[in-house]
Length: 235
Image 1 (cartoon, one colour):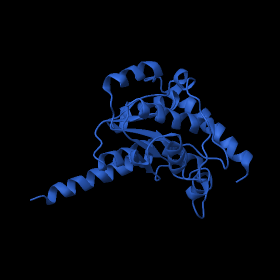
Image 2 (cartoon, helix red, strand yellow):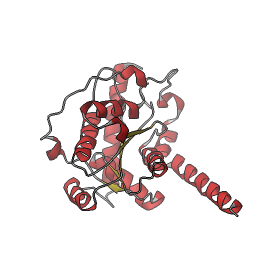
Image 3 (cartoon, helix red, strand yellow):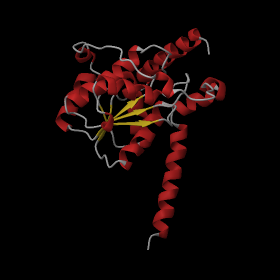
């Protein structure tokens, strides 16, 4: 895919998230307010960080902000572990692995970093990462991203999925105090072979349904059926 198309997609993604946040004013994650709540509830066992498309040889401001916010929360002892989430969706790089490599380079120990490479939408970032958290025995989980995406994710989660997580939106005044650099990573190790962009795999309508959590609803129903079957066969 041509570079200008990728950049147009990224710009559109940011605009869409901000539009969703505006529409979903039933909840707005005021960063400083929720950061103070997080301080009172800390430490969290894990922080979920949604992915963002990686462009070859670059570190987008969105990725940089999310990774450094995770580093800040880890460094301050507010979170004990970080789960980066995101498959190769619009570009051939697995988003979670790119972010994990950046995180290691800036100081988060590799043993405290986990990745989910199944998610292709924000709601799936939440679902798949929370499953990893539970599998690892993490009980108290938070989500760290921009306030716009936090608002969107919370609104859907609060009214439909009810996955028990808190939100710690990025406080940009805090990020301004951090000297951020672009770490050197082996980006090719996160390449997906035979990659096909989601815009070539799914219609716009299907992508919008995915963003609104259609796949998560189906997966949660399957989880519920599986749990009922397991309970049925218990002695």
